[in-house]
Length: 206
Image (cartoon, rainbow, N blue to C red; front, top):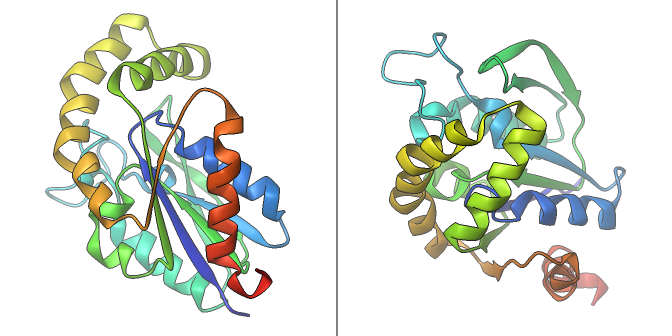
């Protein structure tokens, strides 16, 4: 089986996970699988020296070694037991998820394009750009609804961690993207980019 890896990056709440889900729905579970960067966080208190910590928007928060290893295994047609992350406790879950290889692997994460060894495993890279105000509004609504956060804690984290790390690590990684998409609230905006991405993944069908 020939496996292609599509990396989908962008700032927090830029719309990258929406694009990832739309691609997954277009391809179907028999053709693709999603590999989220967020499940590879070290968590608090269980990371090697110099890794992990409370800043989850810094590259050191992500176990890129494990992510690269497991992505390499999927590319080689091997199943993996991938980690699962629990956001309320900021720790990896004890259970894992059996993940089978598929012809297309959708790799979703804010920091995936800044990590050179991971970029080398991608066949196609996409960056979803979005202005800071929109990203903050989306994150505020999401974290209050899904993660039980207070509005003040979300704002503090965005100002002190999310925004600075975006400017330092995420936005500069856009130069490595093969395709750059400017997201809007409407999913209709993704129709043309999805057609282009599908053409890149399956050029023989064009």
